[in-house]
Length: 382
Ligand code: FES
Image 1 (cartoon, rainbow, N blue to C red):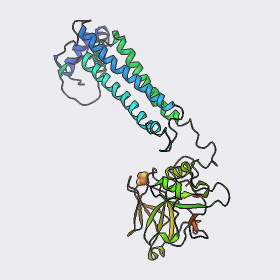
Image 2 (image 1 turned 30 degrees about the vertical axis):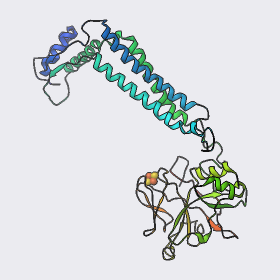
Image 3 (image 1 turned 90 degrees about the horizontal axis):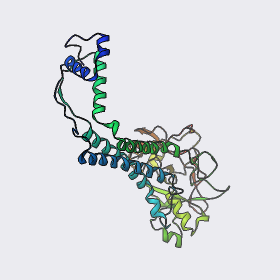
């Protein structure tokens, strides 16, 4: 606002002025000319006005309903728990995430539409011309702008529109509840409660359930029914050509013919491992990580497929450069240098799985990863 214009009134004169006088004074001091300043509803209580009010209230009410729906979906017992595609309740489970997104999205959308409609229907829109100036505002300018704002509030008739106020409050409250439910929900299941649990963040499906349990490397044939019936395909040392990469999953003999266990091993998020067979010339240049010198078997190296940035699958292996690429944010890892990051946002190497070959020539894990895989979290030290 400008400090130019007519002389400012004294403090005593300012205190005596009513709102209309302050509005006029503010306009004069700012060189503002009000070209048009119509009342949105000059005749009170018309049917059109009430209809507009009900429409605004409807959007706020819808926002409240969808906000509450989000909270209900989030709190619905066991809806979020993974269900195998063969499970009859898989369809309902697969709707969980869409239901969260749709309910929260509609709550925000309806609240936004309600605010826009209220602004268009009830807040007076004045047409003015004002000169632009720089510098801090004087006391008188601040007083007049407050008068402008409170006048706009009064003219919008919000004070006497209790239906709109109530529904807007309900919409904003339900939305606030939905937003508050997000961090609260993360405390419902404590991932650290039982850190020895094989399903905890410290372990993957490659962890033996008892000492000496053999964990094989299993190929995903894409035909689960046949795997249940005829057995899975295990990977032998001679199965990969030099320079090849294959994604493998853990398999234990106890899972033989068990549809649910075989399906779960393929879908558990921390199970996929990239089994890479380096070319002999490349293998000769490998730099091993301290303490993990014997994690490979000959030219075979096994790295988790879960990116250490934010956990996308690092699905791409470029044989020519021996780089492992994560398509999410373009992190690159050097397979000849214990999969340490050499480009992109990832800062830690991909965890390496210790492997060997058993008496029958099958590639097996020598145990679980010795560090947590995937992105950082508070308790993680590496
Ligand atoms: S998740 Fe892999 S680079 Fe971001």
